[in-house]
Amino acid sequence: QVQLVESGGGLVQAGGSLRLSCTASGSISIFSILTMAWYRQAPGKQRELVAITIRDGSTNYADSVKGRFAISTDFRRNTEYLQMNSLKPEDTAVYYCNFGSRATVYWGQGTQVTVSS
Image (tube, rainbow, N blue to C red; front, side):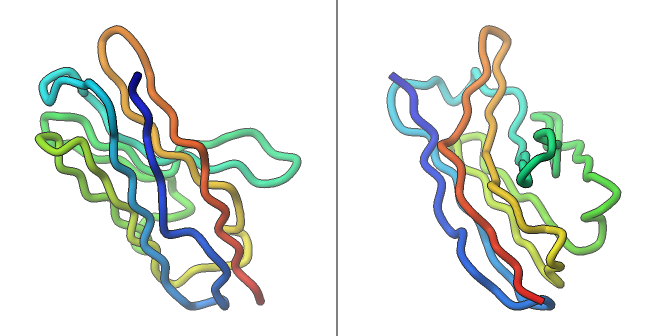
């Protein structure tokens, strides 16, 4: 059984930084994952894409985080990170990591990020 294990969430003041990590455990081929992404869901809102990297190296960010967040990925180790700088109160949400293959999508359990003003 494949599990995505996240870490790094917490409480931070506006303007601060956090780094989220996500690693896959279990039997997963290093060649099967095609996309790695981070999503977030704030209270009362729909889950939204924050950043995504495709195996070919291309990366996209939500407009709201461009220039502040950076996704980094290691497809050989099935690990990804999200460096979040200049955090704002509106970044407060549960953050989920997401790995995509041709057959299925894997989700982390979510980690809370709270930014105080």
